[in-house]
Length: 235
Image (tube, rainbow, N blue to C red; front, side, top):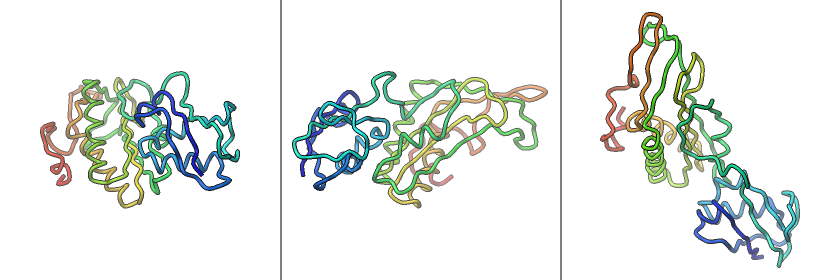
C-alpha cells in the first residue's frame, strides 16, 4: 500500500520536498514504514533514528499498525536541531553519538575510530595536548572527505568530530564513524577517512612535556592539504 508521509525542517530540506509517497506491505507497522523511508529515500536515512512519528496527529509507537488513508508525519527533534555530522568542539566526544548519526537501514556494518591522547611518543612522555583548528574550514574539509568516501564506497555514511582545547592523557581527541552495507567496506572507508583528515583538515596540536612543549603535526609525514585523494591511499 502507498502511505503519504509529511516531512518537516531538516527532513524536508534533505528530501527537497515536504511530502513523499512510501510503499509498504499491507498491515505494515510504523517501524516498517521508517525502514522503507530509509531504503527509498537514502538522504533521510541518517536522521530517522532521532525522529518521532505521528499517525493521524497522534504520536505513534513503533509497533502501531498503519492503514490506507492514515495521515503520517515524521517529526525531527523540535529543540536544539539535529546533531551535526561534522564538528569541531571543546566538549567531550562520544563514539555512540556518531554511531547514531550514521546508522541506517541499508548499513550492515558501522565502524568507529577513536583517537585518544597517549602518554608516550617516540619515548618522550606527554603531559597533555592542546588542539587548535581553523574551525569553519575544518568542518568543510570533513564534508569533502565524506563526499570522497561516498564516491569510493557507494552507500557509505560518514561522521567526524574533533575536539580542540586542552586534553589530558586518555581523553578522546577525534571520533570518526562510517556505516556501509558490508564490513570490508567499513574498514576500508574508515581508514581512508581518518588518513584524509590528517592530510587536509586544518587542525594542529601542541604537545606539552615535562620539560617543554612544541606544536606538531601527525606522525605519518608532512601535512599536505593540496594532496589528491589517491595519495592518502599510498600512506
